[in-house]
Length: 171
Image (cartoon, rainbow, N blue to C red):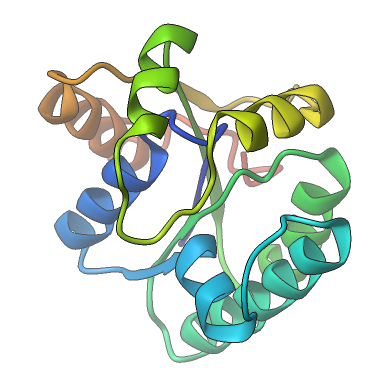
């Protein structure tokens, strides 16, 4: 199973995705970590985003081929990127989409704090928000606050374990 955890910078998706991967004993692939591994400096250009997404897909395919569950943590902000991944990974395993959202005021505060892996600031958030293409297919949407991680994880595990996603499309 491949679980896509998507959302805007500062939404809480990485905090959530890492804990979900730990609970599921899944391989955790984070676009910010991969960006730091494959690029020097970050400007979040389209070319840089493509390089990061290509490397993340390569690592995901390798993990799935070894029979591992995978949690992918990235914005997945366009339909083209999501469709590309779904086509590539659906042949190998089921795919599930989870979108993490948060209030913009909370996102602004979160993006002021230093974060271990991400260099995204509020300007990057605004840029990606402008390009954001909503996911129209069936998926789980979780609302992040600074106090509800346990509830988010419980909801996600129930969604995944009970097959509440559309297995026909992988979402």
